[in-house]
Amino acid sequence: MERAVLVGAPLKEVSPRAVQEHMDELQRLLDTAGGEMVGAVIQRLDSPNAHTFIGKGKVAEVRDLVKEREADLVIFDDDLKPDQAKNLERELDVRIMDRSELILDIFASRARTREARMQVELAQLEYLLPRLQRMWTHLSRIRGGIGLRGPGETQLETDRRLIGQRIADLKRKLVKVAKARETQRQRRGGEYRVALVGYTNAGKSSILRALSGADVLVEDRLFATLDSATRQIDVGLGYQALLTDTVGFIRKLPHHLVASFRSTLEEAREADILVHVIDASHPDWEEQMQVVDEVLADLKLDQGPRILVFNKVDRLTHDEEESLRLRVRTFDPTPSVFVSAVEEGGLDDLLEAIRARVRSRFPRIRVELPAGEGEWLAALHREGEVLDLKAENTRMHVTARVPVPLLGRLRKADGILLEEL
Image 1: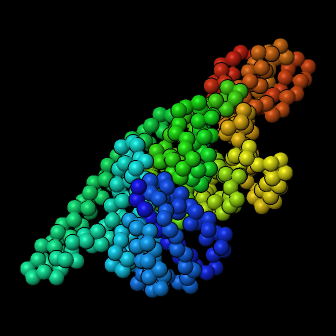
Image 2: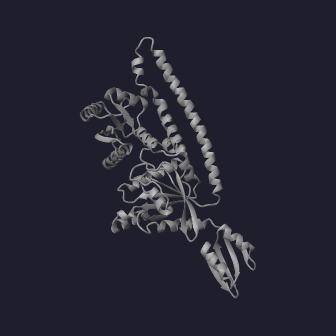
Image 3: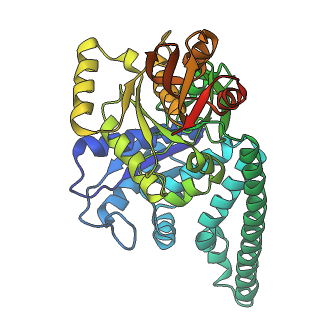
């Protein structure tokens, strides 16, 4: 297990609570990657130092802490420019990582499918390309040797060219995978599609497993889910929907890393509705919700219909839940439900919300039935949504939303007058 010193360098306007939450999250990322925190240093900045990101005095403090704790690496909570990372490695004489590099390492260890592994490799290579010179640590020795500078520089350029070729190759392969995925989606026909989005560890996979009964990985760690998982679920009253789990978002997650996971984002983009899952028990749920909203907006996934799902209400007291419901009603007009993925019946409100959305897609019709046609009336109630019912003499006038198969059967039935609205 590698030993790491964590470094946070927030701007001065960031609140102390937010700073601590960000550092706690960085520690959880390190834990997910299999490392151990042996120390932490925080410096509040007016602006980052162009040379080493943090000030000269803090660099010395980190150097002393690395030696004292025998650390193997130093991890910064913010993205470093290639030159900053190179300068820090020279000053500290230890390996330097930033948040993006740490997340990429987690992605690499957790990708399971061939597509996800290609997406991770693509993101890693795009991150690595401008940092190649730092990775070639032997170049610092070669550069000073007479007659050796040329081969060193040649090797660096060779690596750049090979990486560029591999990036192009991966992009071509991922385009083919995307086309195959599009064919799969077309085969699903008119099935209603729901995509779970949200902050990492909000409980999306738990909801998918609870609703589908499928064996989906559920783990109390960041980025437990990287590969998209789609399962058919029964939303009640005979209605079905396709539910997709997606990769979780996180603070300071560079959007090019999220965008590299094209498969999960395509499922979200093609969904009929997004279900934004929020950890209601987290003290900073509002900030996490805002992070997800900002990423969705940047990826142009914020225009369609959405349901807010406040999960893990089983961890709240009754008063805390009531206060949360009141708070949500006052600041967000988006339809909201409050659920628990671990309690029996805890997802009923979510199922009802999805069921209502499924029904809303059905064609709206007005049908006139003989009064004795109780079987058809029962089918309208069972398979569709009856909006209005009036009886006049020996005829019944029904306004309803009905699924396409039922609409087809009604058209073929004798003695029924039907009008699509």
